[in-house]
Length: 159
Image 1 (cartoon, rainbow, N blue to C red):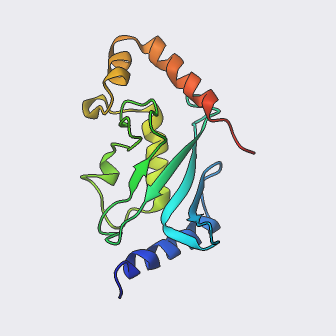
Image 2 (image 1 turned 135 degrees about the vertical axis):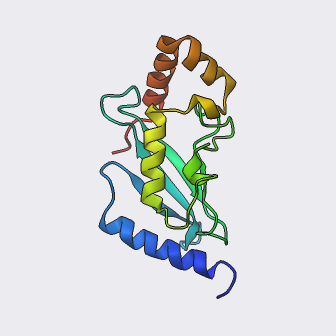
Image 3 (image 1 turned 30 degrees about the horizontal axis):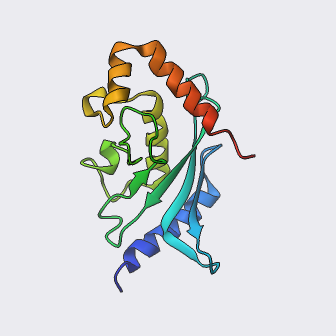
């Protein structure tokens, strides 16, 4: 197959599967280019904040960028730059084992998005990506939770 053919084939299947069955409140769709064509290699997603957590009410935009070696390589997962979370770099890139060292080609887009939602309320301080978040998480939990709730308000539902 041509370069990226395997990746595009897998992503087309992922899209079909997602459209048939995906978790409530989530969005995941390939981006549409200005000329109306669909770019399977970049997906625009929304992850809802889990109910009964400080993230509740937020609908967080996330971009998945796939390369031609997908599914051998994981997608790059990025929130908007400056996203406040212990395991998200200032660039927005997510630091999570299932899209890093623990990646397996059998992991689906759905599993990635659900895993990132889990990470929101259950960060891994041993793999901190932002010093300020880490310090607040470790030393001032009330302020950390306040910042999370403020961020959730910045990303209300679009529906």
